[in-house]
Image (cartoon, helix red, strand yellow):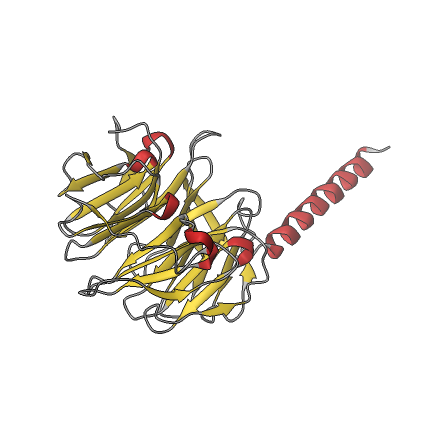
Length: 322
């Protein structure tokens, strides 16, 4: 074969490879950029922002801080614990993280993280905090805790489960929201969503279904979303008082959800990530990056105009763009 023919064949191969790469890129939906990544067995489970300040938490006591809306992150070292941290929330005055063995960590005004007595050894999956210092944490076997002093002290407020579950089974609870009035909304197994209204005793059943709910997000304007098992998704237009089911077209375990006032909704999960541009009426799969082969749980953004971030497997923090 002449040198000319070899060059022509080589050029054809290169052109073919470029065409395949271009086709694959065209098929990808969304844009995903990795900000940080860890080792194979690392994991981050949750993150939260207060304006440009953010915290991400995960396995073996991992805590990461950002001061620039998530562009760069610094690991807290040494960590105050080796237990896994599963939930986090922050505001201007307080930062709270919860995890295994009933662990609650509290940090005020960027001081060191301190352990707080939770009164339980049950695993805590999520925590929520409002601007007045009212906080709630939820976990395994129906655990519900409440604080009125920014997480300094806690009291058990779990409902009597017998009206809500078969034989009074204590459901694992994975999602919690505390609104500015102080009402506490919880979600978990059996599709349960319950609310304890501010200033009132007792709990109100808001939803029950077949699929467990793993994440809850209720915005200050009253729009809320919940996601969970088998691609389940719910939407509320009245602050979580009533819920309607959404068809996602996914069978994945969905672990996180975040929405914005312009109708954008993103749900993250096990080997799938979903995006809606019309308030959850229709959904598409995000296929960029490794979201179809890995898992991502917590979702958060610094403010309405900031990029959406997700945390998950191998200790990754990723940025999700349109």
